Image (tube, rainbow, N blue to C red; front, side, top):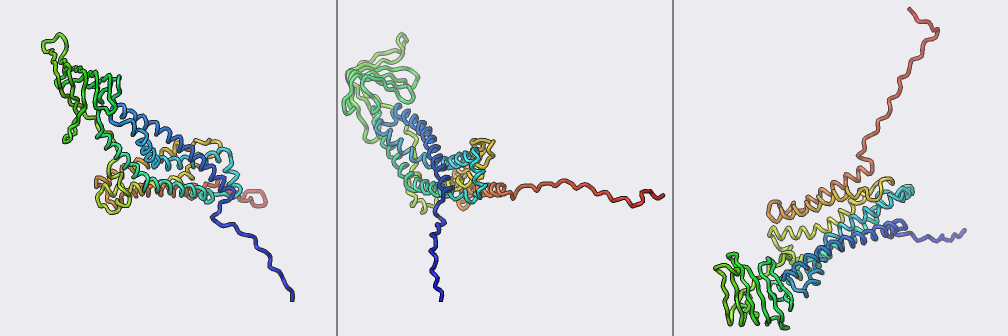
Length: 396
């Protein structure tokens, strides 16, 4: 009997484990995604910071809430910037490979569209998880924090933005207040100067040795109680000009306009939205569910859009990609407003917009695989000349 020893079998690589090419594409896409998202975030945060600082300078917000409010704004911006950054990151990453003819070399090695989608799906699923966490948990918390900060700003004193020795004006510019001294609790002022515009268009100036800030508990109106001062109404030299001396006089402070913030619906937890049957609640729920779905669709759509020839350059398809993204984002907003107004049934909702992107994706993939190309016309074969009969002479 012949004994044979079994040959040791080599370990097979699991299907889900990325290879060398997959890791190379993943690194290219992830680095470009992070860079694009960071650039977009810096631009949007600069704009938001300017808006918040304007509100703080007008007395709508206090200096202590600027950075917490900016942090909440950054979280809500990431919901939109993460999908867009992934979309542009795949386009730029694969576009570089096409420009440097690396994609041509990969294609010659047997790497096709199906192999390209493996790292893209990995990045897309990572983006879906990140956007899902932002929309389901983090963004409602940030919206609630923003709403809380702005409610506190509405209850804050109109003198909170006042500093000793500086002029403070209202948002309309009709009222100007100056105080040489200010107590630590901002309730007592010294050497007051107030310039305001009356309802009939006239001007009034008040000066006083001191003043005290008071708030009406019922109406919430704020008053400055001036002590030992004068009030000048009208313009000097006109008949209606008058000077009033007083020992105690009250002036109503204008309320600062509330800053535009998030609504209570945006601050609701996602689990509470499933129980609502109001059109606005349904629209908010579908919007939150649409963000992770749009992240995956944009990642899949970027692969056929990134296909270029080496002579076209890295940024040749960016304009086409932006022309696809802008209508997609605008249609989502329009569909959301239509659901809120009750013009679109909830079953249709925002899903028809995603269906259009899926249809566009299928068309681009079919075109990329050559299924929509026109068949080439073959050149007409020349007509064969029949051989002449032997003999050479034509019969009569």
